[in-house]
Length: 238
Image 1 (cartoon, rainbow, N blue to C red):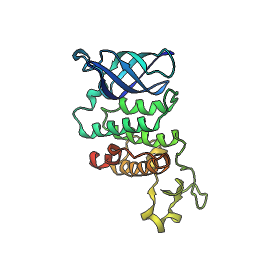
Image 2: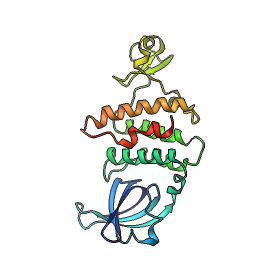
Image 3: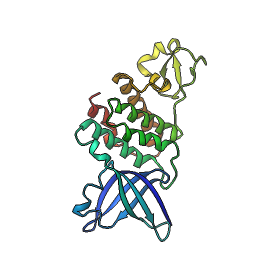
Image 4: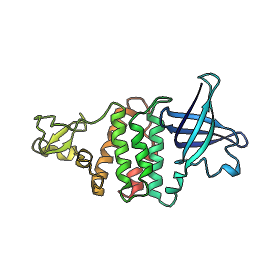
């Protein structure tokens, strides 16, 4: 078994004296882990950092064996996070969610673009928009996406204002107003493709996506919600 791909490093751990086992989210093979001989040497310290984008050749004698990787650094993306605790918190959350939720050795298709966007726009003023979109579309990728097309109560497509935590469906203003305290706010900036939402809109979306990820994926599969995601809003200062 052998293939070539590229992706982002999500975790690194030492193996033996100077080798590593790294985990990556790859473009065509989803979540993979592999052995890098000599990866822990001093000359390689800048390559194998969480968040860096690497190209690699992967090889295993049989499919059940751990992959051996020969790598090249494509983009030192990790440096874009180092000076910002908020960006580091988002990176840590994204890596934990990817490693818990995404399949091994399966093509992520268009969802990989959402991960790529987060890294490509991390130096922009609206970088957090792309993190929030990653979580929103992660729900869809996992098959637990929200139905925002019409009001769950009336079928109306007008004045959509809330999202029900029970059904994940939109609710119009008139039907939802009496229960507003128990509903999430409708993510207009996602539907309208507005890349510059107010911070409060991003906060509302992350509260909602965190709730549905925990309820409909982690609890369903008997998994613990990642601590770095559970504390993300606090670490972002939202």
